[in-house]
Amino acid sequence: MRISYFFIVLALTHSIIADTTKKIFLAKDLITLDSRFSGANAFAIQDSKILAVGNLKVLLDKYPDIAIDRSFQNDVIVPGFIEHHIHPLLAAITMNSSIVAIDDWAIPGQSSKGVRERKGYLDRLIETERLNGDIKNPLISWGFHHYFHGELDRDDLDLISKERPILIIHRSFHEFILNTKALEFFNINEKDIAHLNAYDKKLANLEKGHFSERGLIAVMPKIMAYLASPERIIKGLQTTEDYVQQNGITLIGNPGAMYDPKIQKVKNYVFGDIDTPFRSFYIPSALYMLENMEIEDLLHETKKHLSWGAGKVQFLPKHIKLFSDGAMYSQNMVLRDGYLDGHQGVWLMEGDVFKKTFQLYWDAGYQIHVHQNGDEGLDRILDVLDDNMKRNPRIDHRTTIVHFGYSAKDQIEKMKALGVIVSANPYYVSVLSDLYSRKGVGFERSQQMVRLGDVAAANIPISLHSDMPMAPASPLVLMHSAVNRVNYAGKVAGPNQRISALMALKGVTLNSAYTMGLEDDYGSISPGKYANFTILSHNPLTIDPLLIKNIKIKGTSVEGKLFKN
Image 1 (cartoon, rainbow, N blue to C red):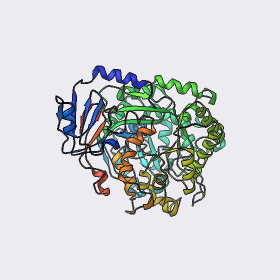
Image 2 (image 1 turned 90 degrees about the vertical axis):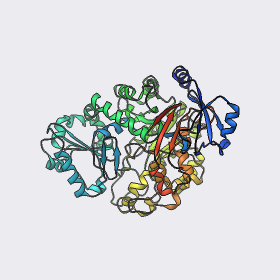
Image 3 (image 1 turned 135 degrees about the vertical axis):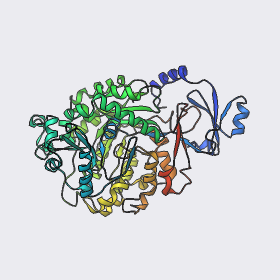
Image 4 (image 1 turned 180 degrees about the vertical axis):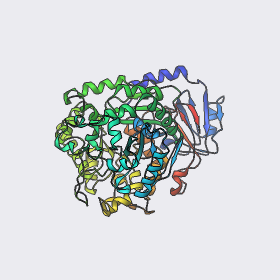
């Protein structure tokens, strides 16, 4: 049983505030994801937990005086959607920015149509700047992608405005581009990057106003002082809260939370109150901590995070986030056979640092989640894991491959043997497989990106995530991408890598709970688990797969409390 100590506290808290009456919910289709109740059409809850599951008549015989809620008897009920990998801070910044992206976005208060060529992007940016009001107000725009929109630098932005600070956030969130006025506004200069080694200094180009990966981390504190100011971040988090609930999500995870207790307090303020329509679990980032301390101090500082949560926000004990190679949207992943244009990917943690950090957490019994996008980046993880398994074997370690952008067929067997699990972003296929087939990577490799079909055939557990804002935090959109793999060219990219709708549904429910070590309490409609469920207009297992993303979310239940859309 992987039940963490704080669930005792949660249970006591909810016993005080929850409605103590029992209730039965009836559904047209009830998908429990519990094999014991495959034919059930009803379930009973008491307080925050599921009491029983089965046929309505049987439940009424067992509980003759129980109330029946028929609100959803014509709808479909599935286990509560879990978005186990979202970045609330980045999502909040996105919600506060002007979105000019390659894909369509519909968020509370803003709708943006995708634009995938240079002229259209620049025209939209110019128009956005014109409508931005007071010239002193910085223009913050997210969504730029150089392979669709062409290269962009300080001079390009100065042509749009020399008076207004302009900050362009790359679609990956791993690259920022600033005009001259923005560099002045954020007071970014040579002193901020002087400490970087020669390799990382290439990622911090003041002349071009371009900062990426570790070069961006060096100047990020100055930029975040504005982007994450209390008034901006609270507004963005409140919008994010609405967005998450509207997409049927009942629980979120944030692997790689920033090492900043002040920012965490703001997240707690918005997400921690009892009326928040989801619960949040956070995982610290070793990469961010290493910017502030030595490796030998990591464990001590990681444990401090457990006191950083409040209310409905907690940090997961014994979980940590590490990083292998760079961003998928930036083509900074490290590939075995390199890129067609000869450029190189980027390591986010130096080899020796990655090995030492991994071993430190491995020996302390942590579940290690590792950001990976390239097949050589995956080789690094598997080699280090193999060394540690031989040196200090562990059972059920659940080392998690996060994103799983590019991999090679020969790696699947090793993944299975080593006991890793996969947390994949299938949206990459929808938005990138067509272009990457022609630019940077090539057709054959891009057809097999996010190779979930091979992972499923090997019986390796698969969960799906958005990495919001890398994809919309919509479990139905993620399911749609994983099941169909239809890209911008209207073609199926790698039909052999599609997975079933059932497996995709498990990927955003039961397997997401498993990825977080929370499967004893969440992920299926089962007696004893929390009463988390999502109400849908149609059955995602029987509807035309091409219509999955169009299913309407009618509401959610979070620990027995209903939130209707």
